[in-house]
Image (cartoon, rainbow, N blue to C red; front, side, top):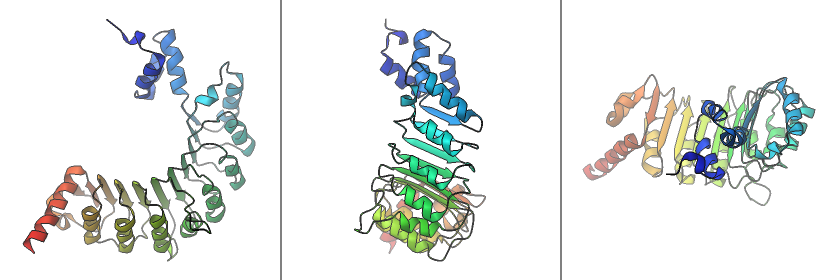
Length: 305
């Protein structure tokens, strides 16, 4: 009878990829073969904070195999400076996901080093150095981008969206984008709705949409219905002016929708009697079955009319 030790390395790697990181470390201790596969799997995703930057770069340079080529995801926390970022990225030619979180030592020009890599997912959170114009000019050069998650501490989100929407020929800068998450902790301008609608109109492939600010209106919900036919997941935080009717319209007219979560909602359980138990503590959470119940009520209303 065959055992797990008889499996080829490619199959072992697939199995290890499904494990929690702590279990991957345990696999290192099983035997030499498990070690050789698990160590490469662990290097696919790395997190670097503060003083670890120089040590990580030296680690890449000293490895007997080109371990940096295995890294697919890099998370940079507090601490990296310009020369450290450039040094680390030079060892990661196959990097696909980059997370910049609370990196005050970086500057806008550092992001210019990134588009040369095949980045498909970019996250920028808690970075005071980002400004709407400079960041947008860099982000729109990521032609392979599938996922974008940006959190603005300052104003300028509308301007950011306008810059990354389409070029002078009317061609979208990010044609492959499917995952979009945007947030802001400050009050934005009155033109934010218009900027969001223009962006959604030119990026119909979006399947995951997360909006983390309170300046979103019913007309944005109408635009989602019109321009995002493949939307599967929709999350909104603090939608002050959103009505229960608009939420129902999203559910009715987005047939591929699988999950909805709306925090700090003004509506109550009486606005959603079919799924009243899904409205708790000013949060509406709708899974697949909940969405089916609401849609069934739509058809009943049509018959009754």
